[in-house]
Image (cartoon, rainbow, N blue to C red; front, side, top):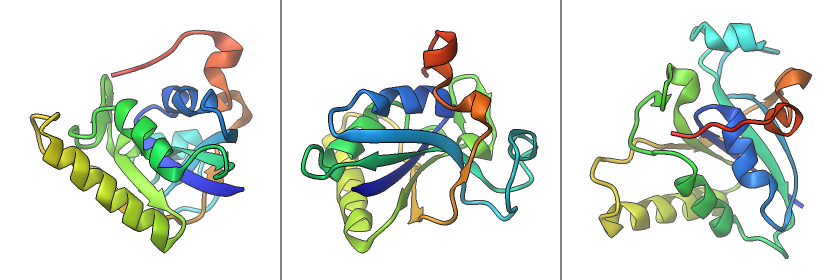
Length: 155
């Protein structure tokens, strides 16, 4: 099993995008990329911790490749919006790929370059590609939120 971590706005909808992908073993939502240990949702929403709302994915690389997960990432949000997705504003909603290995970093960079060169997007991609740091799991009520409560979110 391998890990992949993506930030693409509201983590509820991002989790939905990955949860049904064959080869994804599990997902959990949480916070990554900030300075505070054990941040709460309230802390992250203050914009003062530097964390992004993100989804950590455990996947079986024999069933789904990291490149396939990158394709889902690019399709589930607008990577040209800086620090926002749809109605959600703030650095906690930034677009970021948190890589767990040099091969993930290279794959993410190549994937971004391909998307940029494709001409599919009219604006510049602002997605950050950064090394994964400690992932702090969000409160239980955020986990699989749409499965528990219905609904969905998108940009």
